[in-house]
Structure formats: C-alpha cells, structure tokens
Length: 95
Image 1 (spheres, helix red, strand yellow):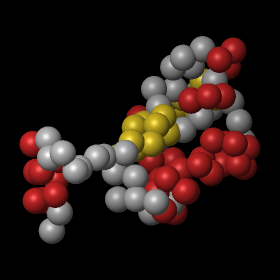
Image 2 (cartoon, helix red, strand yellow; image 1 turned 180 degrees about the horizontal axis):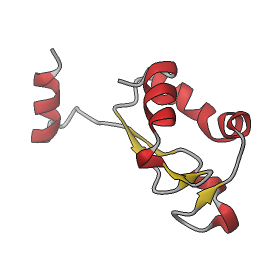
Image 3 (tube, one colour; image 1 turned 90 degrees about the vertical axis):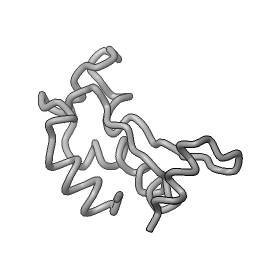
Image 4 (cartoon, rainbow, N blue to C red; image 1 turned 45 degrees about the vertical axis):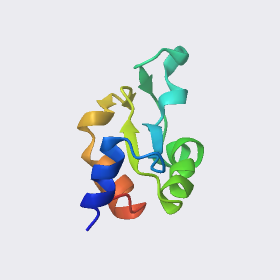
C-alpha cells in the first residue's frame, strides 16, 4: 500500500522527507556519558527519562527509529527483545 510513496522517497522526490527518531533508548544516560556504554536504570526510570519522547514521535508518524548502540543494564539494545518488540512495537505502536 505504501510502496509507491517509499519508492518516490528513495528516488529523491522533492516533496518526501522521512524523519528518524534516535537513539532508542537510554543513549543519553550511559555510565560516565561514554558513547555506546551501559545505561543502568530501573524500567520506570528508563521509561520516564528516555522512552517518553518516543511516544510522541511515533504518535506523530515518525518513519524510522534508530536503535542505540548502548546497553540497558548490560544487555545490548540490538539484542533486547523486551524493549524493541514489546515496548517499542507492541506498547508504543511503532510499525
């Protein structure tokens, strides 16, 4: 259904723009502020400080979400099905 719009964007249509919300999630709360480091936080703290902005981004139709290279409590974000599948996709509704 959206194939034509995606194709136009890829071809560089002058009236198409894709927004990307990044870096999901906890990227700004890593230990000592080191890039790609570990964010140590409870889920409520992670949600209220780092996840809440994604609620608005998804509700406003953001096209893509870039996952953080950091970890949450020792688990790399790219390998975190709870935050990526359950929270981002199922609870927040990102498709």
